[in-house]
Image 1 (cartoon, rainbow, N blue to C red):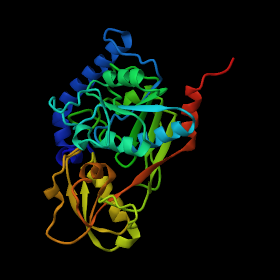
Image 2: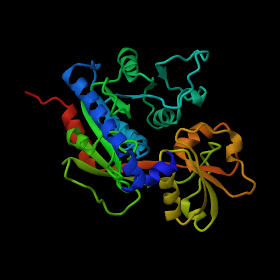
Image 3: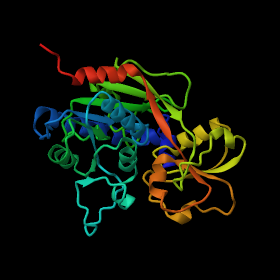
Image 4: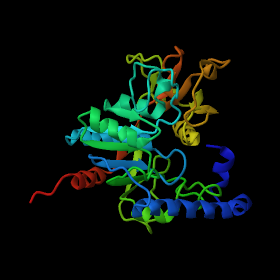
Length: 343
C-alpha cells in the first residue's frame, strides 16, 4: 500500500477534503452495485456448498490470511472438509505455462503460478486451494473435482457475483477504519454502514493490549491476536530454529511485502530487535538480489514472503511463523450455523 495514501487516510486533512467528492461518488456507486445484486438485477452464482467469505472493508492487510488458516483448521477439527478459493492476486498469468485457470495450488510447481497467500494457506492447511480471477470458476472447480463440503473465500467480501452464507470482516484494531472515508479520500472499500449486514466482525488486536472498538454497528464482535513461533530458516532445515529472544538487542534486516509492513516491523521492535526496514509492495515478486545486503546481519521476513523466496538458497535468512488466536465463541457460533437443527 502506498505510504503517502496510508498516512493521509488516518485523519481528516486537506488531501482527504479535496478528494472527498470522489469518495462520495465511489460510495454511491458501490452501494448501487450491491443493491443490483441483492435485487437480482445482476446475477450471483450460488454454490451447492456453504460459502464463508473472509474479507474486509479496509483496503490492504488486516490479518485475513492467518485468520483463514485458523478457520480452516478449526473446521477440519469439527469434521468438515474445507476447500479454499482465492483470486490469486499476483499469480503469473502465463498462457504458455500449461497451467490454466482455475488453478489448483501445488507446492511442487513454480510459486509464481499461485501467488503468496494461496500457497501459504495450502502449505498450512493441506486443503485444496483453487485460484482464479473469476472466483465463481474456482467455486465450480471445488464442487466438481473435490470431496469438499464447505468453501472458504480468502477475500472477496465485495465480490457480489459470488453468493455467500456467512460473511466475516477482519479489522486491524490499531487502525480501525482510518478517517472513515471511502476511496480515494480514505481507506474504505465500502462505507461503515456495510458493517450492519456482516455476520461476524473480528478485530485483529495483535498490535495493542486493549481492544478499543466502535460497537455501534454490529453485536457479533470477536478479537484475534497472534501466537509468535520460533524463527525458521529460509533454507527449510527444520532442525535449526532461533527464537526472538536470541535476537533481542541485535540488528537485523526486516523484509516485508505485505499489506501493512509497519505491523511486521512493529512486532519485531516489540521483541527488542533493532531493525533495518525493507518494505516492499504487497504480493511483491522477489528477486534474489533484493535480499542480499552488504553486511552480515540476519534477514527476517514474514512467512508470506518466505513461500516465494525458499528457492533462493540464502544463508542467515529466516521467517517468522505466526498463528491466529481467536475467541473460541466464534467457531462455536459458526459451526452452530452450519449444522442443521434436528427436527
